[in-house]
Image 1: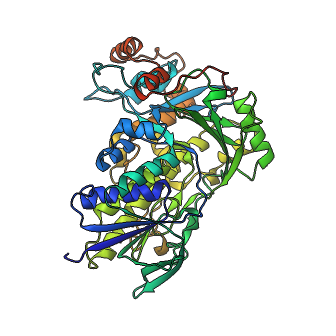
Image 2: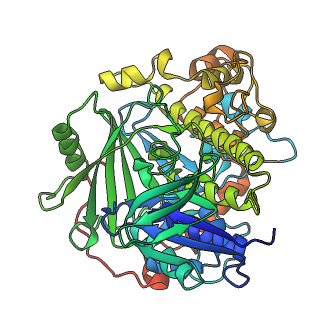
Length: 543
């Protein structure tokens, strides 16, 4: 415990600098009581992918733990608020939509929102019966007042932001608090006994030794794969999209007249478009399957979604692969970010997994060599459970679609593209609505009881368990009922002459308050964040 420890993070970007900032905060008390040396080695020659990034509410915890002021962060990173994800054209290709908001209002001690809605005529979307946020989002309102908050429980929210600026902000914040930043290329890796890395050498001739190496080199996985030989588990059978075409839409020429306080996910012919509004531009990207649409047609469809004159806007293609490292922690190497795996961005979990990886490393930090294997085995189990939880949840959006207008949408519904864990959940939830105890030691009839392959587990061969650590029963209900799960069964169970859907008076009252007290999102950003006022150009065609 007395030997001073050293962490070397290889690779920058959001993942690398989130790890550096969080580990410095957790292990070194934000640099005030340094016990661990932290260095980040970043290649000056690696191109930086500049996209708009949407987060989930856990980002607020990360900022608070690091010690970052929310408003400083928002100004530096062109950030805006995100209160929900709006899914359009996912059930039918008819402009219909539903929301997955961050705040809901359930009636306790007996919570039966799902069952009551199923037994009603379903004339009001499910989430509008237990959350004010879908309507607040449709009104385009900020989750914050211009003055002091006096509306009862605050609205939960996350952020949209410029990921590249976020990395730069974390870099400056971290180096001011003791993290060493080295801009050099890694050219050689030296192994130690026991299949561990001892040091890396740079193109400037520096040899950097460390006890722990964090691989944040993206899909290249220069340490976890190239040096440690950890294989990749391909999960593309369940998520068919493998490419995105992206475009930045600046407000000085294309301002739509508002800044949506939510992320838009609009299904197109062979995938879906993200629409992420920042304070100076929107980032749009068409996530699609290369097996079903060409690059040329995908770009054409993205430009048609935006409409207007986009000839001067550059489009860029980003290929990706869906899957995970069979072990995230191997020897003394931990993969954080894309080096550890990737799930497409439908539920904005990219930065979350980097965040979680850093948080868990701080909790499981090996202060000496003794016990590192024990810590690594537990770390790998928690990270793999969370990966499969996200995989199931996103798989659900695709396989519940009712669309048959293209081969892509017909294919994603086929049984071979629905993983067995999700199939078992569906069968169980056809018997009873989701409830909180469904995620306690989760096992449903039909789930596999076969041990996992040893190479996938690092010693823990139990099947994966969805702990509800990220999405509980309320989030599952939101997607299930937004996607018309059990629609036909309800007619059989409750008949076709069912009572009208009810909205609790507390939600109606909250909406009345919101109308009076919450400003439009762009007005809040203008007045509080100093966002530039823009002239309205036109509404995107895909809205």
